[in-house]
Image 1 (tube, rainbow, N blue to C red):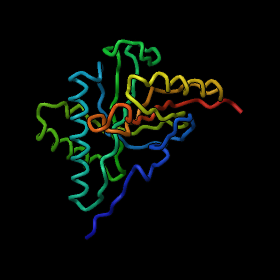
Image 2: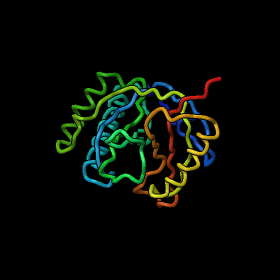
Image 3: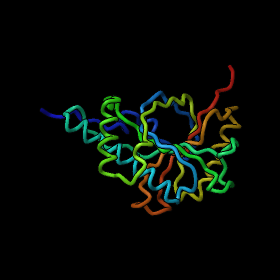
Length: 207
């Protein structure tokens, strides 16, 4: 039997495509694996959380392929970022004050049963990681404004300034958390070639 194949990046092409010019995109409700944390993304806590998240994501992929349900590539890492004091996200804040939810999009076939099996498998393979903190959750952002940032993370503020200008020009209000989609692997890509989509859910102006 041939295992059905798909690429969620092609299925949801608009959510993984952006340009250096700000634009709007509709983000429907979709299933994710998520893990929460707080602190510097260069810190050990963040590294261990992301490793646990990927461990579960690959366990889900393996389980679906083994059951001949679906074969697909694991999707890029995404992150929601916000400050721990309820203020708007800012790069001027100390990185220790950053809260985050790291996420990986899942196929619809990743049922609660499949995810639970993957959690058990990943916990056995990675006993020192916070695998039990990984959860399945759906996210619906609705209308969003986004822009593609090319370069190291440290230069994102300049790109965000252009996105904020677009929001002002179009009369859009931020309605959710700072969202980043990492299209490049930071361990395999030169900093100046890194590609990251920067996104905010927005409230559209009244007609």
